Figure 1 (cartoon, rainbow, N blue to C red):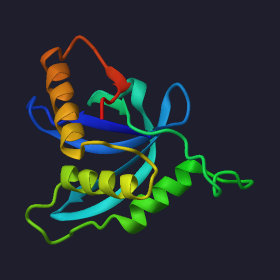
Figure 2: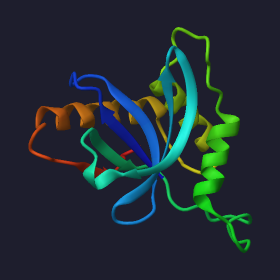
Figure 3: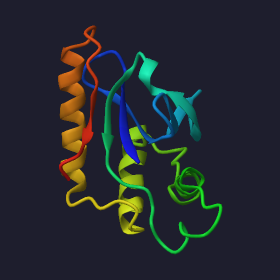
Length: 151
């Protein structure tokens, strides 16, 4: 599982999402979006190699290996997608709710469930933002930061 930050065009703020890489070009993107004032959860395929707005893609977790994943037909993407859709609330009425606040709540949820192990959630948030800002400074040069987080 990867954290993905997408440019909003100002070099300082970003759209926060999760992606699970399916192959060399396609990932399954999971995020919340705002449309006409209302927030909703969305997921689906994303062509990350040709994305014009993806600035940072950082691996934060590995394939789930537990008693469920050893069962025939287990699908990691469907499992994580369902977990994010069902267990991480989308605050439809809060003025302080953003894709970033949802993402950070999801990080806590995934960490609590043992799907990722983050030693510092605020450290992860700062690292992702700093990497994205650094990449935005090189915009136009098609530099991608695809790496593993320090947290």
